[in-house]
Image (tube, rainbow, N blue to C red; front, side):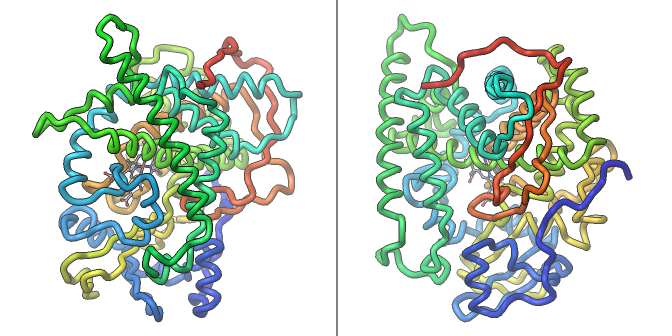
Length: 471
Ligand code: HEM
């Protein structure tokens, strides 16, 4: 098999660590907790003094939890508590009837046609980064993971607020960074279920950051409402914000409240930012280790990128397979969790109300019973007939069922287009000796960044410099 290799990942220990080490590892990098049994058994119950999580990696049982009986399951309180600040009224956090209404109101924002219409904005953001790299001395070293985090925020800014972010884009970016730093610190208090009034480190700072976001977003919304209300302003942009402000619940015809619009803008920014940046970073890293696949992606980009933009994504099959394989090995959301409201039996395990269920795409995607050579990078799994053979509930980078990621097509399109464009224009080589290690901190990121030597390809096309930095 050409271009296949084993990229870095923790080797699962034979047994789970003892309680104190387990707590320390959960805090440092939960990925390193999972012992070999989790990658071999379909369903495992872990006995801990403060909770007994059940890890479910049997496709039929996953289907039961996420799809067939999804009405019996809620997102778990730990996840909700971590997300609560600022996002509480957004699609990621709401439950029950409120979720129902929001999901059907927001669905058109991420319909295929709308997402396809963002092709130009996504390529523009890639070219903007490419033009910046093009001005560096050839062979300069950049932290590609950090650059992709900026780029995906830029794509969201261009597609949500295409006429600018109102205040300073850099200040917004710094605040976003602070926000992820703060929510990334999983508190032991959260793990043991301590009530909300027990103070957590960093929460005050987080509230200040959220107040800043809310101020900026409220200004942008107010300015946009004025433009949309002004019947003579025919140039008001047709971006996600316009769609959000015009969105009506198809059942009742009701628009969203200001709090819901604001929470969903923030939700899209936070749910769609680091997740997509990490998918891109892992894909770039994997290509840097595989000259064979790098050459295939480049040949495809050279053949397709500068032609007809209609159906472009469908023609970038190799690049998309690389992104999908990167999301298999390093799923940005490494674990999902749910709690049942009523008791039920899953496999042979009986779940009590409020039991914690963990479905970890990281484990599922490397499960010995579901994948051949699961730890090897091999994009052919996602090409042609091989892709059709992947069991539906063995590959869940975007979750499944009613709460599946609403932005999955957006993210796959963005990652594929950006990767193709940058590989077309540059050689990206990992700096020799650089340590690359997956770290689970809300999202699954390269823990030490991704220092790469960037060299423009001599025969690559250079799009004109564009000045599309928002703000
Ligand atoms: C590679 C990139 C992405 C990955 C891996 C990813 C992954 C996921 C996963 C696994 C879920 C389900 C969580 C659960 O069931 O508990 C989810 C939900 C969600 N994602 Fe994404 N996501 C990505 C990009 C995006 C983008 C670009 C957006 C929006 C711009 C977005 C918005 C959302 C929202 C709003 C939800 C909640 C949906 C609901 O509960 O109805 N995501 N995402």
